[in-house]
Image (cartoon, helix red, strand yellow):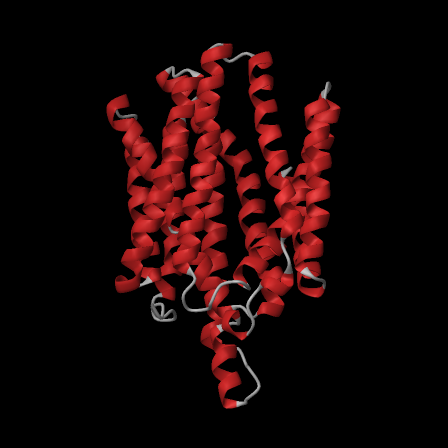
Length: 355
């Protein structure tokens, strides 16, 4: 799915800028529905691979158009509050999956059994199928006009001059994407292996792992709201740097294999802090990108993250080797620290929000 998404997301971003975004969302919804029906009916690894390719295509088609139509519907210079609320709702929804899995594992059995895992996955497919139908209800004519245009374009339209993206404004999305690439490389090396880490080092069963993942998602949403409110006074870029740095410290602590009573809060805080800044970085990006280019830039961000995430997972597996998670976590932490350098360079380039 990752390969399919990465291959299709940039062409989809170009099309999202060229054609009505609502059309792209409806096409993606059809692909997503076919993917989930195929996965539910799969009885061989070949059919599962086809379903996952279709699922990746669905994500690649939907992401640029969805993020663009959302940005077009929010006022520039005051987006982060809405993005933070959306982030909270999304994280609660993501948490409901693991918590539902806990309930299902209690009924079906708390063991790593393929038949049980397939039954749990089927419930998730049904829920995803329902949510995909909402993409048919988005319409471009419900989005805002000049209020949601890039801030520089708003300022120039008032003076009657042709909008020109300044050197400062051009550096903002580039630095954000560079940071995403670096952090994505580190994340791909370790995040996918945390369930294996819990099982191999701490002998945790599926219910315990699902509880930890669900709790992390909820705390991510709550911290996103808190950090956004702090950012109004302290600044968005400053808060992004603080939370990413603290998350890196938590990962280093996890690398020392602490007792479970310390491991769980450290893991929850690591994941929550690292992802809680997403609404802030997205609001910064959409504030400087003109409407006509938002599909392309949303796809660039997705490619930057997804491509390096999936590629670095191979490196992570090599580093872990025979359960050497410590080495992988420490190298990941070093990459995270490098990823904060572009964030520091953004501080003089990004103003506080208007409200």
